[in-house]
Length: 188
Image (tube, rainbow, N blue to C red; front, side, top):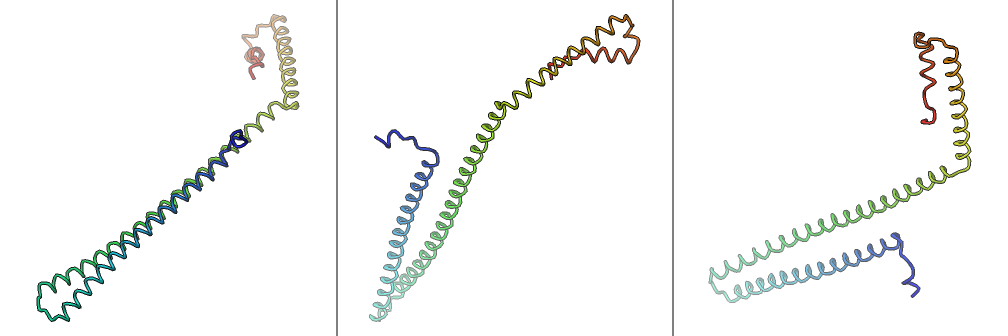
């Protein structure tokens, strides 16, 4: 019941998957070794049988050349089979190495992904804590107050220019100043 109530984290799940994969790999290797042993044993038995038959025929002094040629051909084929099997085992070993490297790369990429995800979460938490800090709140309040003061000053200047009844549209410097004062600072 205790185990049923616990939740497993991704760090605990991954080693179990790795262990299962390694067990499967080892079982496959054992099967391959058994098969290779059986194939070698069969090839050795064939070669021993061929050699025994050839010696038996030579001892019997039977001059049946067709049978001797068949025996030589069988021995030649046995050697070809042995070399082909050896090449096949070499290729299987290379394939196994490639699979192991692929598995290691996959595991490394999963580890990097977890590291990146952890770093992202940490940065997000840091940003959230910074935004909620008292210092930033105080600075925002001061900025809002300064914006409001600046807006009031802008309105006062605008009203002074308009109240003085100067034709500000004809004077380019004055026109630029009036239009500058129209900008809304709350958008900043």
